[in-house]
Amino acid sequence: MQVTEKAAEGLKRELEIVIPASELETSLTARLEQMKSQARINGFRPGKVPVAHLRKTYGQQAMTEVIQEAVTQGAQKAIEERKENPAYQPDIGFGDDENALSDVVDGKADLTFLVSFEIVPTFEIFDFSKAKLERPVAEVGAKEIDEALNRMVVQQKDFEPREGDSPAQSGDRVQIDFVGKVDGEAFDGGAAEDAYLEIGSNSYIPGFEEQLIGAKPGDGVKVKVTFPGEYGVEALSGKDAVFDVEVKEVAKPKDIPVDDEFAKRLGLEDLDKLKEAVGEQIKNEYTNFSDARVKRELLDILDEEHTFEVPEKLVEQEFSSIWQQVLGDLEKAKRTFEDEDTTEDEAKAEYRVIAERRVRLGLVLSQVGKAGDIQISDDEVNQALMERAREFPGQEKEVFEYYTKQAGAINEIRAPIYEQKVVNYIIELAEVTEKKVSAEELMRDPDEDEAKDDKKKPTAKKKPAVKKAAPKKVPAKKEAAKKKDD
Image (cartoon, rainbow, N blue to C red; front, top):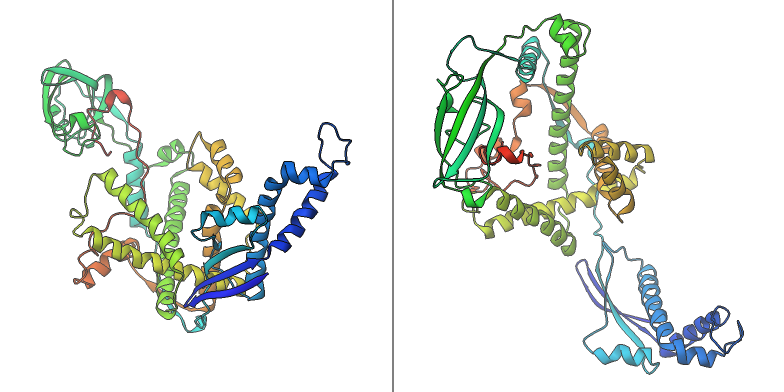
């Protein structure tokens, strides 16, 4: 085998590998001899099929297999001998001559192919003991616990019928039947019976709920609305509609005292135990926010301290993944780049910078993880897999099958675990000081602060969302009366 370096610019490498036809012929003969003991051909006893007959019958297929194996092993051997460290699976090329491979299969020509790849860059790891990190810490006080309890009261809200013919008020719950019409014709999904609607919840299309204020049981109300231009059903977008609504019941919210009985209703022994549980939950939430802020600060430092070249193909793959998600989110929201105060070219440039940052940080964390011998246990992966399955109630089995049977899918579970363990490892080596902040400051999005500090970046204020939000399912019979996004 002959290896010639065709290109070595920056991280890019291209090798030309030539495997003589005589070497392929030797491998083909060995393969045919192996087939001889296994072949079952009419007219010949087992193991007695002549090699010449096998060559005539299976020679082309066997040579194709020999070539595939020679390419794989040849590329691997060449890279190992050169002590290269490819950043991804190398690309294999055979040139533009379509007849070249045919001649190789026929034993008339040497096998020549190109191996192209980029190497993992070499770089010095930043001395983590010099990293100064600030951990924001917020205390959980009585105010935060009381606010959380009040939110729980709202979630556990009960209603009781208003006395007599008392009219509906904002905050009341009404039980209604309705039929919606556009241009005098009823439309699919525009009718419901015994539907419950809390006035002021903004769960129905704009203008619907307000027109029921003042209605009494037994009243018929004609609700006139206009469907939003971004409504989920295209045929109804921007259309005027009239809903014939019959009010069957008006109920007011019941006062729920936050006491021992309320705690028992939620499965706790008494109010003190409920407050203790709520306080612990808030504390965990604050800890998660604090950890996220420290991690972000650390990654910013790592990005600033490491400025090496990164493999272009890895950046392109990362950018493509981000960009597809951006376009999907914009399409789902029915928004444009202009709506986001930017242009497609500006957004592409910004997200390409993000993609390059992610690749660079990934390489840094990977090298740190190897140097620190950081491992992930099967228990950690299984625990994370169970948590992922819980995100899809009723589909747990399908989730487990996807991640355990789909090739490479389990890496989606392993990668975040590994990254967090490496981050924790670095944080232990860094100098970390605590800073007491308010809960509002702790939970504020750092991007908002950056946007205020950097007026020169027009896209800093509004960027297409990278994270996808799972849409809420709406019963078909209520779909037309409700807004597109709850």
